[in-house]
Length: 326
Image (cartoon, rainbow, N blue to C red; front, side):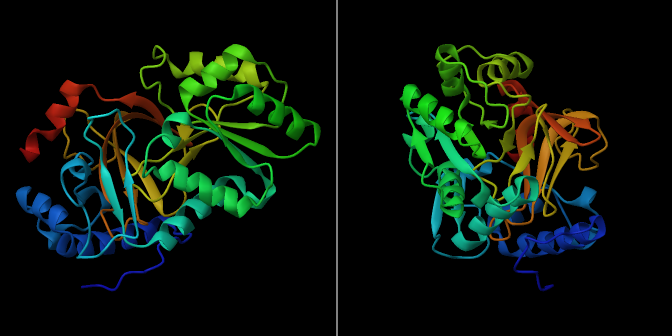
């Protein structure tokens, strides 16, 4: 078996990324029992896997029903997806907390620079109310790297958040507000700011609090409320150790150790990345201890500068995509 780069957070070229991804595939084929069984079910011969298009992607739903990990280890962290009471939630067992911290910090630095330049405010009530959130861990890491005394979390105390934003604006402090969708809309219904330097991150999630709306409508409301030109977003999930970022327009780019690819909606095994609109597959080389090849349930559209995330597949489409694993 080939020796892997145990520090996957590297500035890979396209050729270097492909070579490393193939090495990771061969390792995980043999060391990850769940991924191995899935590949065997598909009659995958690892010797014949020679390009990125040949690599099979594990349906993300397996994280709800199996322990997806390479070898036997006691996890240093366990992350769970968000959800309502009684909902089946994904679990990602993290062998190396230092690797996750390095991945999330370097992903942020790749797009936004040094976290020490920013104050971070988090309007994440539903995440704070649940345990084992990878997003809250990410916020803690960014706030620690920032070191700003004004860093802080906000539940439903919107007036306190408004006052803090005014203070930071008047001090010309670079500020990032990270918020769940329904909470940002609740804030926007009460307050108006003129803070064009503010970076607003919308994480998604109505959680039944408000009617769903298209991104264009949502972003127009938030741009007006905060007085900003663009709304930013982060594409991450508990099953991944890295994040893609959108600096506006809901189009996401990846750091060098991560890729978003599109598969056909009609063929869940399509690995060609040749469609203009399809379902998102993720390669995350930082997932060396679990599975780096994840078939999500999110729709995407290709743009010259990245992938636009269009939303989730409906339940019928998801069932169709998972028929192959029954």
